[in-house]
Length: 369
Length: 193
Image 1 (cartoon, one colour):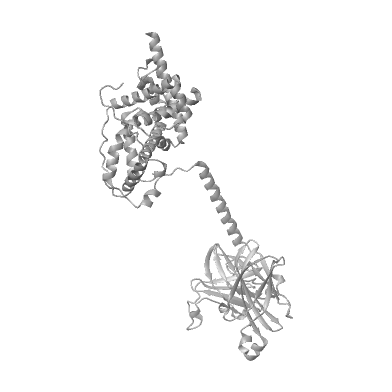
Image 2 (spheres, rainbow over the protein chains, first blue to last red):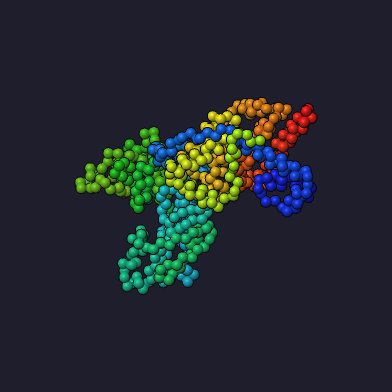
């Protein structure tokens, strides 16, 4: 080793550090390094002496008693200032923008008339029955379930399918199904009638949850040994492809109505349907806090005109926008008339009627006033 | 060399294990808001911290203020000390050093530093102490903590938040710088004589 490579170890030696053997040997034999070591030690000694000459003052007394805390810890800490790097702030802004744009997209999707999903239910191959199709909306606060009744060789299958969740082109479906064999139906006539639409006690049927991708065939086992295959596709033809939603020109159908004033829900009447089939007929809805709404495909006194878009009815009243969202398409045409009677109470029309129960009903043209 | 007052020997014996146990116990007391324990800790360490800060900021009153702020901040919010990273004393000095740096940032550029440097020029250096003031602030701090306060390499590493190897090389650079100033002065004094 030479002086150049040893001199840092001389400094370390002054500090009481252990240094390599080669460095020690060099320092012992090298006059220059010996002088450096002495000078370093001398410097340290001088500094300590100078420091010793400085007057050392006792620390000023401070009271370290407990201070009465004002507010809780989290409140105090929340009011303190923290330092955040600029890139973190930028990242935060980008994240907020991203999330808010996602919310906007979500709102937009919720507001538009959703795509129509066509479900194809095919009985097992051993059965003679053919496939059955039904369509359902994919967006909106109320989506009517897809209910079908299939006649198979050994009996009857009834099924009700609802959309539980959606992830782009994947749907989580809740399928309730029931099978009644021919022998069982012959023995107990009430069984057969239980499979007529609308299904009775549907909530008591066990529900199977499954994720279904578009175009995928998913087999479903039904209690009683039957199976059926479920397949989903978006329908380009809308509801017209499904005979279930084919409406006569005079037919007005209302199911599971929700009324929105802007984005505020005025009322929501679940599991209620009504149809008016004659010309000039009407459907009416009553909600305790809102009174009665009367809907007709023909204009009538006091009504305002609205616009039909499949399962939605848009109209304005007193300068405010309203929208009915229904579980299924409401009529074949595009025009509809709506009357709002906020003072209506069922008890005024019929003695003993309950004013606190919402309901949906229909009437022919003679009884729509 | 030493003149009137007896030399106060810095603690140079390594008592790391004892320190660790002592520091942890003391820290637990501070966290439990034991005012007596903290006052003893303050009385023991505040004068030395104050002396150290005086060399950092060059002003006795400012150094005292910073030392008090350092201890007050620890008392008010006792958190952040990790025994695995260094001693409690190193932790306190680290906070003091940061507060002194903040104070420097709040001052007008170079105002006080120039004042200290102007106290001596290289030609007027009569003692190691005067040569000491010609070093950079960081070199002064490091050398003071090592030679006068007796901080170990690991404590210096904790205070300056640098590796131990860097402490070793920076100490060498500071010593060499000081020796060169002092040596050069003595040479010129001999030649003029």
